[in-house]
Length: 334
Image 1 (cartoon, rainbow, N blue to C red):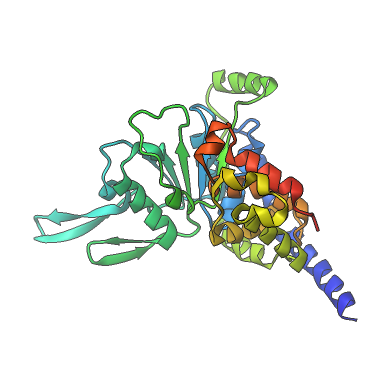
Image 2 (image 1 turned 30 degrees about the vertical axis):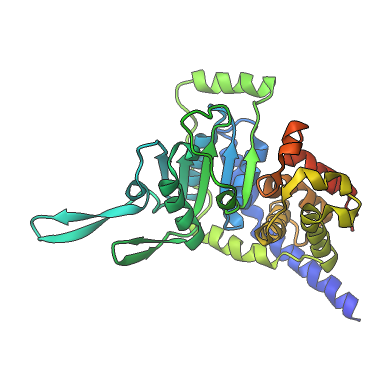
């Protein structure tokens, strides 16, 4: 009897999620007016937004990273701010500061650009550790302290940080422990030939198409709650845990050959974010339950920055991507 009820429950949940996720298609269509190709990046932005996480984007300049998050902010009717990270930036330039008002003989608070729904932290590896940690603290705590006052950040709150993989001179790489705070690390590639042809045409036209706000902030906040209701079977939980534990103790999963290549495995944040991202992916695909394909679709973005490779791996040109592939190919799919 119990199984029947569960099947009915999942059926009802599936219908509910299908209704509530209807806006995803509208939002994607609106963003596609301006963004050509880059389906993967747009999907990852939505996963970050729905999963209340943050995204680290890696790609060469000119791949529409700024355009993507700006377009998303316009389509959601949210506030957007961009912080261009430079070596002389100070934490106060990000979070805000106290300003002395001579007329009133008192201090007033000037809020920084972090107070927005969508924040683009451009070239995060160009700023020193102090500024990076100010941003990361705000991301983690979802609040900012200026002087003696603490302010909650707007909701939804999504930080998309970009880093440029080609310039290493004069940059401050994010420490491994800090990178862990990003729900996803997405690597984006050049567009295909046909897509780039379309990009040329769009850019040579007189101005971009206007993006209309098609989704409200309330809808997004409701969706963030609904995502948590997406059903995840115990077998899928076990599958996620097997993947995570295989990054820590590969020898227990017939993967002894990669043991010397892994410096450190994924943290519990890895398991939480993999489960959350899988639920978000199912939601975007308008399903009320998670299937193994959802986990496999997001596993690279969730884990690529959470697995440390050893010098030996670097010498053999083995990346964290290769290790994830090996693990996913060996772990039994439920």
